[in-house]
Amino acid sequence: MPHRTTAVLSAATCVAALWLSGCSTESKPASAPPPPASSAPPSAVAPAPLPDPAALTDVLLRLSDPAIPGADKVALVQGATADEAASLDGFAKALADNHMLPLTFSATDLAWSDHNPGNVRATVAIVTAQPDGGTFTFPMEFTPAPPGWQLSRETADQWLAFGTGPSASPAAPTTPTPTP
Image (cartoon, rainbow, N blue to C red; front, side, top):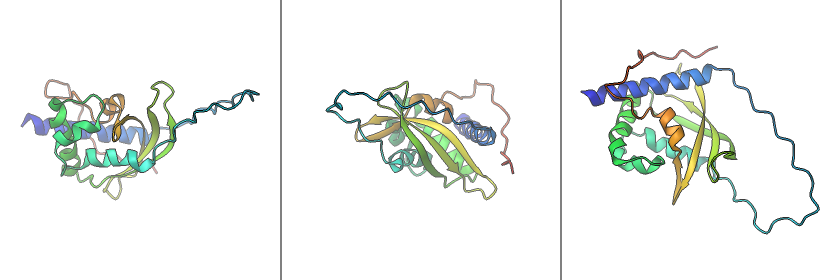
């Protein structure tokens, strides 16, 4: 029974985080001024192209799919271990139990990470299956992991609420109400 409680609490945490991020007033960071023009020849190595947004949203779709076992999802999260497979199972089950599935994801504003070279950050919009669920946005970071991408550990810790267990002091589950 503790696994079910953990799963429901993880989903409630996710829903609360999604709701709060969707209700907050977002401000876009000011654009950095363009670099000064240089008379030096362009470098021989062009920067790698950003990934297709679908490659990133596929990671999220697979993480939220209750038909995919948690053990198969471990590779989708940077640094995840087999011990966290149950949390991944619980997350998807809680989404299903709360009638949030299927989730729809879209990734926009893709850019290379400023603090984790090689990682990509994106603004991810999430729509639940609930008709009055609204659209939530959440900044996420992804890390390359051949043959594709993984959710960064930092993002996973925020979004999936790893470590929330029976000994943690859970917040009361709430149902988000979208703002008009």
